[in-house]
Length: 46
Image 1 (spheres, one colour):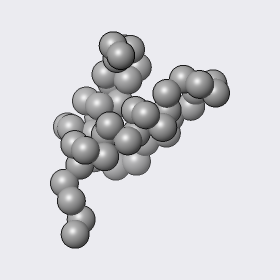
Image 2: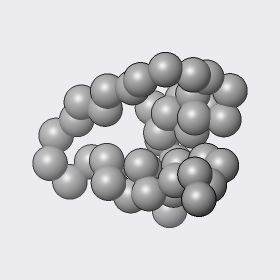
Image 3: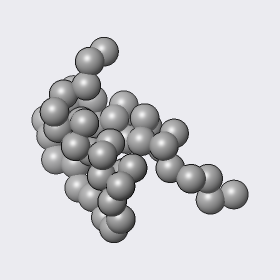
Image 4: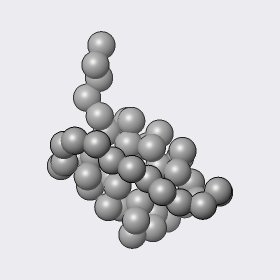
């Protein structure tokens, strides 16, 4: 699956940003898939 521009901005925020985010999109827009992909980029809190 190719990432949309919005998904790329979310991933960029996770990689470079700090703070909170809000993902607002219609059902079936891959919000959960995008967030799960971002979890892999986040440092482990364990």
